[in-house]
Amino acid sequence: MEKRFYLETFGCQMNVVDSERIVSMLGEIGYHQVDAADQADLVLLNTCSVRDKAERKVYGHLGRFKPLKDVRPELIIGVGGCVAEQEGRKMLDEVPYLDLVFGTHNVHRLPELVQQAEEGKRRISLTGFLDRETRLNLFPQRSDLDTVTRFVTVMQGCDNFCTYCIVPHVRGREVSRPSREIIAEVEALVAQGVREVTLLGQNVNSYGNKGKGEVSFAQLVRKVAAVDGLSRLRFTTSHPKDLSDELIACFGDIENLCHQLHLPVQAGSNRILQQMNRGYTREDYLQTVEKLKKVCPDIRLSTDIIVGFPGETEEEFQLTLDLVAEVGYADAFTFLYSKRTGTAAADLEDKTGSRIKQQRFERLLELQQNNSQQIWQSDLGATLQLLVEGESKQGEGQVFGRTDWNRIVNFSGSTELIGQLVEVKITKVFRNSNLGELVN
Image (cartoon, rainbow, N blue to C red; front, top):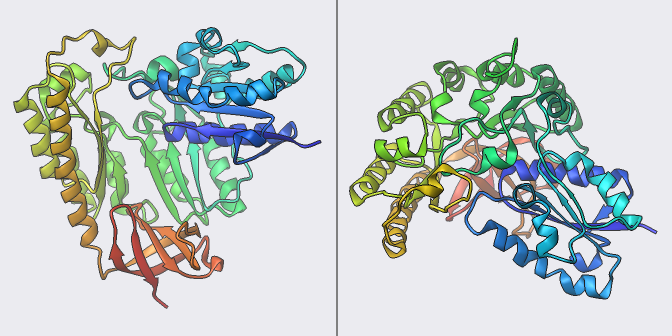
C-alpha cells in the first residue's frame, strides 16, 4: 500500500530548499506527496521563527491536525525547521499528539525518524547543531524536480548576529560549501533542463571568507555563470557590508547575471543601524547603491526594512523614508519590529507605542507602493525578455515567465515555450505581476 505525506512550508527560501530535500528523501522510503492532510499518513510542518509570534502560529497550525489524529491514532505528525530547533522537546510537552521534532541540522535524519515512528517509537525530539565537517557533508544536493529554475545552496548559517535576528541561534554559524561541488551541481541541473539558478545562503556575499583555499563569492559567481547552457543567474541574500567592488563589477560584465539584487538596508538612521549591529552606515549603503547603478544603470533593487526598532524616533524613521525615496526600490519587504527571545535587541528599552509604529509602517508602505507602481508602470509597452517557467495560474491557455528583474509576466502561449527565452510586450501592469503578448 502506498504511503502518503502532506507538507506545509513556512518562511524563507532556505526552508523551501529544505522542503525540496524532504520531498526527495521521503520518496526514497516509499512516500508520495498529497495536497490535503486528511489524505496523508504523515503530516509535516517545516517552520520559520524569524517573525514575531512564530511559535504560537505553529502551535495553532498543529491544532488543525488534532481531529485527524483523534480519528486515526496511527497518523504521524512532525515539526521541523527553525521553530523546532528553538523549541525542541518543549513542543512535545505542549502538543501531546505530536510525534516528531527535528531541527535545522537534522533534516537528513527525517527518514530514520519516520521509520522509527512507523514501528511505534513516537515522541522523538532531535535538535542541536552539527560540527563544521559534518555539515559540509550534508549540504542539500539536487533532486530530480522538473523545474526550469532552481535554488542551489552555497553556504549556511550566519556570523553577523544582528541584534534583532534569531537566525544564528537556529541555523548556526557560517559554513561555505566547496566550490567544486557547487559547480558540479549546477552542471547537473543544467543537464537536467534547468535554465536559471539562484545561489542561496543566509549571507552569500561572505561565501568562502571562513574557509581556507576557497574562491571569493565574486569568483564563484563567475564560475557558475560560465556553465554552458545556463541562461540566467541570481543570488540571495546579500549583506551590504560584504558586497565587494569585485562582486559589484560582475553586474557590468556577466551577460547572464540578472540585473536585479535584494539588498536589505533595514533602517536609514546610523544610530539605529549601529544598534542593529549591521556593520555599515547610511552613507556606506548609499555609496554601494551608487556603485551598482554606475556599473549597471538598469539594475533594480529590492530591500528589507524594519519599522519600530526599540528607541527609534520620528526623526530617525524620517531618515528611512528619505533613503527609500533616494534609492528608488522596485520592491521592499517591510516589517514591524518583532521581539525575538534570545537576541540582544530583546533587552533594549522601547517606549514607542504600537499605534505610532503602525502609523509609521503605513506611511512607509504607501511610499514604497507609489515607488513600485511608478517603476513597474514604466515597463508598459516595452518588449522584455522572459524565461518561461510554466503554465500560468490564470489558466486560459496562458504561460508565465519572469523578466530579468524577477517580475512575473503572464501571456498566451504554448507550453512548448517552457524553458525558453522569449520576447514579450507588456500590455498591462498589475500590483504583483504583468500581462503581456508574445512577440514573434
